[in-house]
Amino acid sequence: MSGAGNDFIMVDNRLGDLTCQLTPEVIASLCRRGLSVGADGLIELLEGSEHSFRMRYSNSDGGEADMCGNGARCICRFASELGIVSPGSEFFFESSAGVHRGLVTGSSEARIWMTDPVLHWVSGRFLRTTGLESAFADTGVPHAVIFTEDPADGQFEKYAPLVRSAEEFGPDGANANWVQVLPGGSLVMRTWERGVEGETLACGTGAVASALVASALYDNVKLPVTVRVKSGQDLVVGKDSRGWWLQGESRFIYRGETLHI
Image 1 (spheres, rainbow, N blue to C red):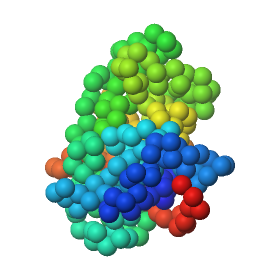
Image 2 (cartoon, one colour):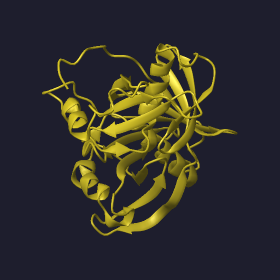
Image 3 (cartoon, helix red, strand yellow):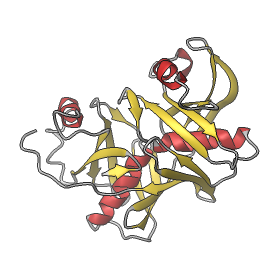
């Protein structure tokens, strides 16, 4: 499946019979582009303990992560396809980051409500490894947000890997987002992701972090805000009485059978 450019291998593992096979090494092998299926990550749909289902997400390196915003939107569509939830009706599901509200909004679109984000700081923190200033927010996974007038000026390629591992963000580092604020208040975003260790075509939790910080710093950024990601797709981030939400494309690309795991 693709969530605005993030691509995922989706696995129905409600019976749990694939758990022993889906080791970190196997997941990394399946996600390796050119030599296997290829994906930004692998998502297992599991039986929920108290809610509609549980999501377990692994990055392309095989390491498990607490949350993935675009992956969560994809699993909502996947659950709808399996008949677990109904399109147009809100439901709850679980991840390692907590409990989330979901809604399948169309044949190729879904919305999720995030766990409450934490804004650690919005400006003024100096990154000694790069000379850059960054904001820092946690939207289920940690994100550094750096504003730029031109995301294609070469600074992203040079500094994003360093920001990802900067000591200011703790031993596990953070995803690095370069964000341009357009005059109309929409955002353009590029993301270097942990676990993938490279640029991805989209990042849902990064879009929420970028919108959170931009709306705090820029008067012309009003919620809901449109975030254009590397794939050219748009994600929409907003906030209502239920909390922060993320909406955008979530579609099936193909179905297949692996010849071996």
